Image (cartoon, rainbow, N blue to C red; front, side):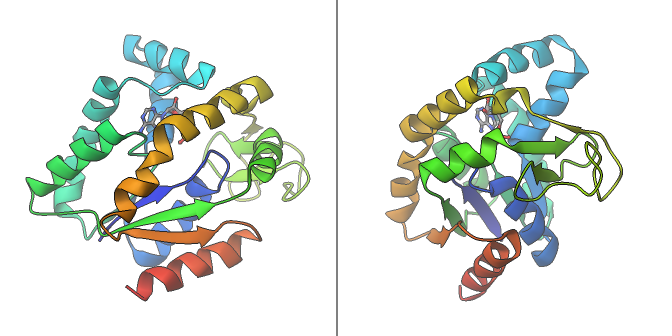
Length: 215
Ligand code: AMP
């Protein structure tokens, strides 16, 4: 089973993709996490990637496709995968369809998590993430038990540089312009599973798992 998680920044894609992948025993591939790792590596590619991320822009397709295709070998072998944060535009979506078709595979479903814009801004500006295990927290809605420390692994929490207000606005703009048209693209082939992303994390993941199991 190959599932894409689609939604605006702050809609909860990463959190939900991790939970659902664990529950359905699928590999979780998050391009944002892969790029953040590359950016921390300090290589030439890492520095390039970092400059796009910090501005809230998409990393160019050539770099993105190269990185994702390295993981496509995974897409041939496993029982399936959840793609979180990829594709982000029509060109990437078409390239993904082609890469999968070569392996006689196809995307099964696209989970589209819907959250109103004012809620997205609130979520992103209060978000703190564990540097070690990527677990997200929220300053007021889901704070950690000890300030600055991850409940799960004790790792240090940090605010993503691209969660600052100016960059958040740019990321939302890029989402509406480049990524939102993918909803139509996948809807035309009947693959969209629309989920209301408001409410608690557990409630939303239950909705996703039950919608996916209805087929
Ligand atoms: P995310 O963690 O999914 O919000 O991604 C963080 C940042 O990584 C984005 O704002 C982009 O700069 C970059 N990024 C992640 N996925 C992609 C993608 N599929 N195409 C281009 N850039 C991406």
